[in-house]
Length: 318
Image (cartoon, rainbow, N blue to C red; front, side, top):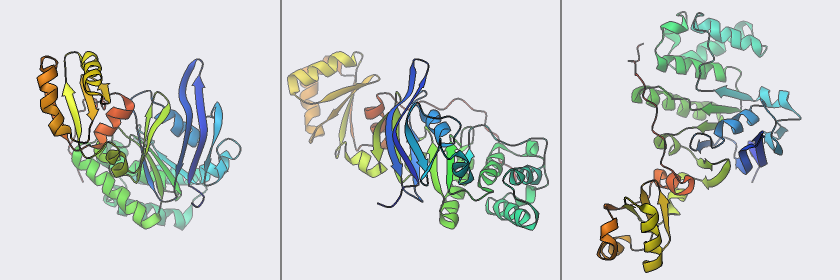
């Protein structure tokens, strides 16, 4: 394997007595899109802050294109862009003024900066709003401008921390279409933290974090295949008791995940009838289905994906 774009080796980080990251080791190949899934407090944002050189890890090391994030922060920043949940835009300035200011931070100016701004705004379909103040734009358009801001200096690596939070489904699709074009045109390596399974499914690689540890990592189809052809879920008012009885009476592995018991079995449909006959008083519902990425998340993280906070959507305007 060639030198990875991102190489994380044994990274641990503590906030006083709290261990936010616990011995995380992970590599991301150049040009890949890697998704990070995990419940709140799993360490996603801490890991991104370490990669962005905003903090050193308590233990271990991280490199970006072979540059150490602690010893060579300037070299890392020169190859790094970021788009986080909160827009890094001045709402009182126009779209173009925001991007000019960002360009100046990276020493860009003159015709080269003007051409780059127009190129990005045209690519993300906001060139016609270049002279409008950011506060007049919809959330979806602001997100696209913020993406242009993060890409202005042509970074080799882009960190996206929950980039579609608060966007309606159409704006999300538009955003991910822009990401697809970005990969094709510039070959950018992307790391995205998300809680949306459909976004994670777009990724070449998915890393699942739970309680600071890396509990699963690989291509989405490989992760689902590890659960077998089909997986069985039993809803119960007392899932812990049901799990114990399933394991004792049937000798199969079972896990408690929220209000359910998840069972891996090579012939799950045939097992259902036997389970109902022996334990029907504890089973509220049985479901046999092909594993999904959401199932993978629940099995490894031990919880269901968190529902997105209620958001008042706004229609995206041009």
